[in-house]
Length: 213
Image (cartoon, rainbow, N blue to C red; front, side, top):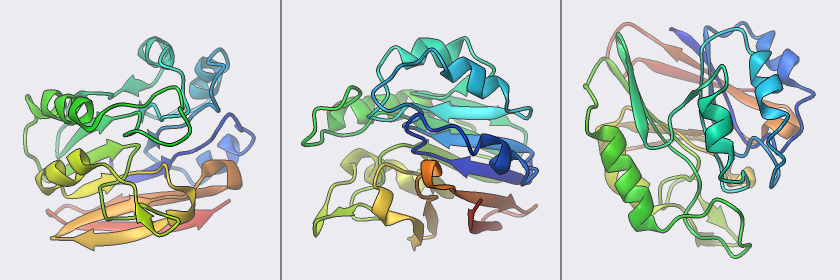
């Protein structure tokens, strides 16, 4: 898997899925907010249109029953879990730390920490170590109205990864590097935003393209 499509924040608007797939990715990462407070009944049909391996976590705007939908879909649900794929290891965490909006899938930072610890428990360090997290790390791509609203737990654990794929804050689309860790927010897919991740053969050789379809 060298060329991976990263999308997030679909919020129930799936009309651009085919356009995203025309980028010819070898796999797809979905970093949450697949629905907009539900419903989840269309999610399985949408994921079945993705004809390459797909790895997903829920977002804070997804109802918690989406976990069961993801588990029984063609995608791999990585919420609090990990998968080793040869030269790549992927850990995932969904939901978000608390927001002012009482969205369906909010967690305390302790719960996020527990999910990350659980997901990392069997993690095998490989060439590329990736975290798919709906909430961004604290103080990175997480500013809303001048305030940092990211997850302290994601920030604490991100040193264990080479790449953090996050979402949640629509206005913070971009790429940052902190202490050798790349962090990317692809922007809301409902507006046609995405990122292509290009993984080289060597550690840290990860190129990120922010794209619009």
